[in-house]
Length: 313
Image 1 (cartoon, one colour):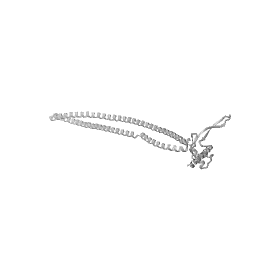
Image 2 (cartoon, rainbow, N blue to C red):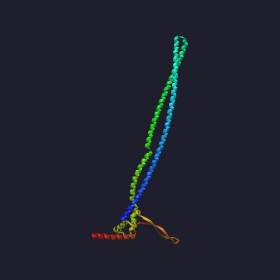
Image 3 (cartoon, rainbow, N blue to C red):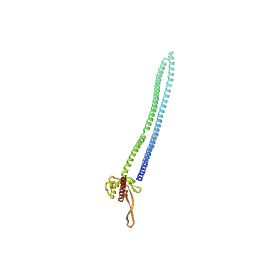
Image 4 (cartoon, rainbow, N blue to C red):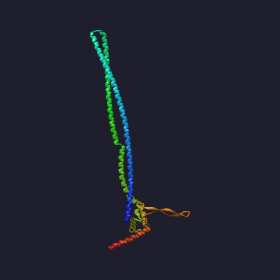
């Protein structure tokens, strides 16, 4: 009986090792899948980062080109306005000198009529130059306004670029790929826990539905559990030795239990040319009539010995 128990324990350890190896392989496959998803997520994040950098570079170049063009245009307008203003100032100074000379001539009283006409003409010219100066001043103001607008556009572009960077960083830090990796890791942990529970239940129910061969037959002899069940049926239920094997098959069909069996070649019918053939026959590891008769006899003798020891005590 001790040898049978040791053999059963060894077989159970072997089955547990096989199950542990299977679980380890499943976990390794799951970890490889997680690693693959992580690599794909990292590649996708890197591709998104590269695309973001490219788009940011293009946007930066466009903003710089636009700002440079606006600055150049401003400088050109400012230089033109300054040139016109200088011309207007020079013309105004010349006219003022001419007016002063004319006034001196008027004071002297020479050629008053013609000088008055010249004064009127010069005054009209001064008026035109004043209007031209005002127009140039308006253009200078417009140029300054354009300069301020360009500065505001550059500042707005810089703010937009900073906001774009921040949004890209937030999108990258909370990307769907990493969320998927985290969910996959949580799913992996839940699957591992469920796998552990299912493995324990599978071992429990498989040991009942499909008993191991060692539970019935081990080391060239039937196991103690097998013999004790038959002896109990013969002694407690008054079942004859010839009917005990049938009980195993009846209750196996009732409880849907798969009895351990093996295939063996046995002589078959002769062929047409007289040669003997062989066929495969399935044999179950259940004791026959002879075995149960011997077991009953041994149990009777053991009972007598046990009774004698009790009487001696």
